[in-house]
Image 1 (cartoon, rainbow, N blue to C red):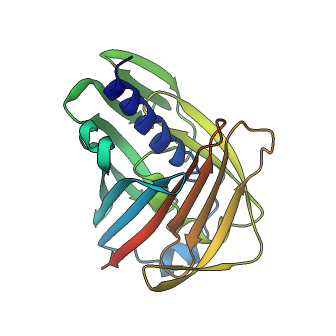
Image 2 (cartoon, one colour; image 1 turned 60 degrees about the vertical axis):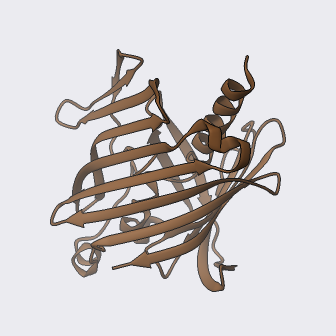
Image 3 (spheres, rainbow, N blue to C red; image 1 turned 90 degrees about the horizontal axis):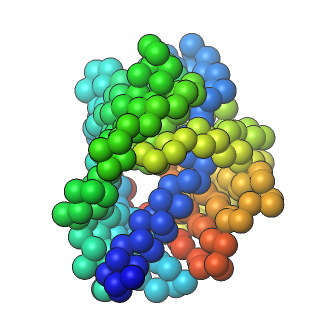
Length: 251
């Protein structure tokens, strides 16, 4: 395997694994009508993150969330640092509806640089409860679980889950290649994290499956729409990946 192919595989795996953190349930979310009525969805959210691998610079992530009436669009662009810049941009796009239960994706895409064969396309057919994933031109259809999110939308679903972020949640997430469920525990005590000179009061989530080959933790900003401030993952090879918020703008 060439060095560039190896790097591409490593970057894709690392960033995809980061996205597997409690990111989406959302399958059993129960939001009260009163809570929904008081909640106003931001028109725009811009978030920038830095990713390190074993403490060394790895990538920068820039995300843009926009909402218009009852629809949303999310773009997430990852640019590798140093030798990882050779891989080109990794772009995620999610579009869909905004409902009382939160984001309801209709279409998701993943593109890696100029590698068309690595592009992934996912369609959510909620009426038929089917998830259609297109991988290298081949379609795979699986049952669509209620509340399922994608790699781009999961982080913005938490804002709709304020009343449900207690005890345990179950993540239903598609990567564009598969659909899996991920159980997480919500820790009772909030933790204060300082990032880029800003202090965030965060809700701390840890994996419920202690026997998993990988461990992932997530800190959500309680006063900023429960957006991720930090994501920490240690893979089965012992590599430590950390994604940290460096800039946040909400309108």
